[in-house]
Length: 510
Image (cartoon, rainbow, N blue to C red; front, side, top):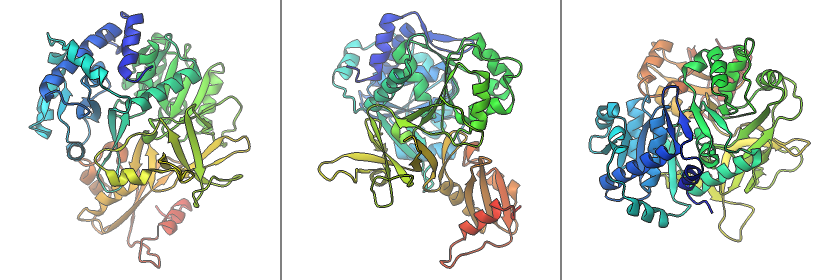
């Protein structure tokens, strides 16, 4: 019985020790090396942290082999890794660390000064030194495994929070194993998979690539970011390395279609194309399906709190460009409930909130019991014993075939550029700027743009961007900014958001 992701790695290492598991264009690591390096990093962490267990270890990540090996090293130490984008504004990293209170960080030698400038007292493990540690504490590492359980945390990822403080979603071993088993068995992945990774490692979406590869004994190539700037290079790359499986963001799939990348050359090895993160428009999908008629296309759905995926839909019938694409049905060992405002299952084509139960649920939000209790709550359909469900805040209904159709967010939280964005967090910062009198944000789903409407006599677009660039990552920048002389207010004394959205949709604001 698999209870730890290290079981996947070691089982594959026994079968195919010299096979490449992760690769970049200029370097690669085999399964045997992954186990060896992981144990050496784990041993180094044990010594540096006083044999701490189930504590957060920060890994400042890039899309490289070192990040992936570091994740494995943290797992061997009995702790959980927290991937943080080192390009993120320093102030946001500091907010995350305040919530997290990590006991150590794993960095490249070139990042030591950066890490210590943010958290001077934090134990710093230098990757290049750790993988050369002459000592491997085999007995201690084995003891850690012996007394670990599948509800121990494996990683935490931080998402946008409505209070301005990022939320850390903490996920356990069992949830990752459950997700991996579901994907592998449903889609018949085996050791012949060659995965083309697109999602950054600080996005939870990347765990599908990583752990399916490790379980199957496959190979994962880290596709250079430059390939997504020049999609023609992307097709060359896919063909060069005979990539046969991709699990990309919907935005990356759309990029290929919007640039007509398949006009000169087609990806000849792709057998399965899967996508998630945002709504997939059939106009985009039809371009891919026309180019690759023998390829399987799968729409995956699931927020971070449900270990990235809980439902799927195989696009096995024609769709018009303007038709919505179902998110389908839940994976085995997962139940999706559509609950109406009375917390009862929907009937007919009634709209309800997507609520999920099963092993896929995360443990909660790290050091945030109030938010955890709000989102991970008692199943209202069960008053006999404790049973948690996760309320996604997404609205959906069933179509005539019993498939789930995603409709919209229940609140002000959106998926933009493959990442979760809380529009209230953007408002909170912009409203705090000296020259801003008032502002609201909403999302244009058709254009996939963040819209900001603001009031401030001396403020302009340049002022806003300059004011937020050190606070937010670029995916949280407003894409459309509209200045008003005065905001409209409703009878409750609040900014009339409905009126402003209607005026925007009618082209009355510019």
